[in-house]
Image (cartoon, rainbow, N blue to C red):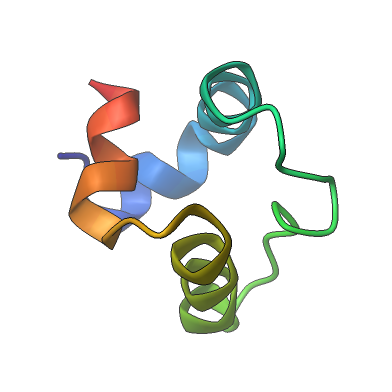
Length: 60
């Protein structure tokens, strides 16, 4: 699983993979704002019914 810096640097690539894997995600779901990472992860976890670790495994 990538660390926070790797994640930030590869966000667009990761976002594309998430959209491919989970077609129900919208741009609003994937909005990444500095300092609001927890809010974004909460939205993703609620919408997908998966843990952060499960979602991050998409990146691997």
